[in-house]
Length: 203
Image (cartoon, rainbow, N blue to C red; front, side, top):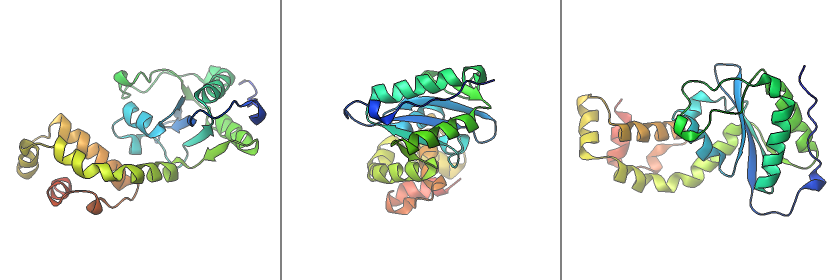
């Protein structure tokens, strides 16, 4: 039986040195989740899986906002200890370069969700569901899309889209990123050049 989850008291938190987040990322089609902490959970999700917006269930995923990295790390350690018997292998599709092959758990979502509620009642900021937070983050970064996509895509990428040949790794990366915006209902027309928008719409 899993150990009782006993979140730290908010009064034990240290002075603010920049936000950090405890994250709980359930997979969309399997009862397995990733537990961890990060200053930039959006970047972390993107590093773990290129199709993060479909791989993770953003309606069930959530963040607990902490005041320091140490605070978020301590929360993660406490929760990981409480659900240790739920530890599971990482999904095979997780990028090895992301160093994300630990802290995966099966059958632990309800315990962590309950703990998040306790933390929120104690003064922590809870971001749930994660979809709202992720959409806000993408919108804040959308002004970079125009220059980034034009710099990333080559003439060959535009030609291959027109002829239907296999996309390059860079083109796949750009498509994955833009699909994240589309999945979170962000209109790309305002953020892309006409050339890139036409390329993206040719599938």
